[in-house]
Length: 359
Ligand code: OGA
Ligand code: NI
Image (cartoon, rainbow, N blue to C red; front, side):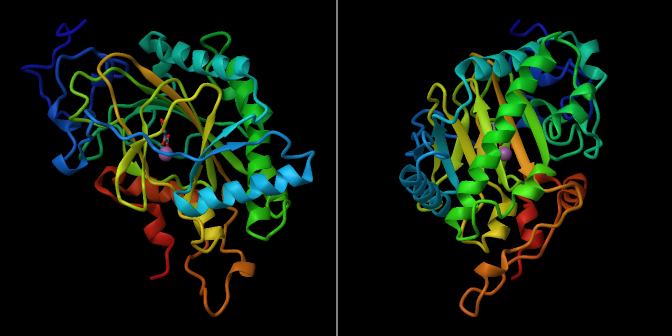
């Protein structure tokens, strides 16, 4: 396909493009200007450093109290360090993981007409398809195509999900159901590690929002000039990511270096989000991450972002505030984040966290 849809001579900085014929998907021979990130943001793809990501074995987390307390300590340590860890023996079968990845590829491989029905820049829509962060609106565009849909409670939302490919709902739904349970288990381990007890968030978590960001990063002709997603932290309490191949990088808070997250079959990535930083009064920092590209193969990921209910405010746990540790954050909700998202250009380094941090 290389070159066939070359944008040469076309209006490269045009802020809108035909849906489904997005530059990301067209097989262009070079990256148009509006996708080029500033030189300081460009990734080093030649000698990428692989991260030493804590791998937490969750086997026995709910039926062996000795194991459970080790797991809690491992997770607490990872959360304090970089707000990032991988999990294995999490209880979701390889078959379900593979099916979710295949459903994601299946959706993005559909003809344009099937996808454009969901196209919207309205961040308040519970199901929407788009590219970059805000299609055409932001200063720099990112090499990503996405479908976002709500997933909790599944029975309320699944009927709004794509009906094509025909097995999409079943495959992605099975994963969503299992992932929701896993996230609930992990947040229990986290709140217990914070000394708040395993059920501190359970009730509100059940009524919480789970936004599934199903991401596609098509091959990029000049991967060193563009990014799939800019450096950001997630607004969520926690995010669980399933990926098809390498591409996710995390910022090591100790030395400020970007490191590639290893791709280990069967593992899932867990990120501390802004709302967990708030809850923990800054004891846990939200993980700063970005997505890099390659010129060979498309990558997909499914990021499940968990927060409390739409308008339910999350605040710092009062148990974690004292004279020595004054309250560092303001309360906020998922809706507050959506409002921020609709009004700000995240590619330019704006962080939701900065709006809820006391100075
Ligand atoms: C996100 C995200 C990571 C990835 O959707 O917020 O960071 O690997 N995704 O796609
Ligand atoms: Ni993210």
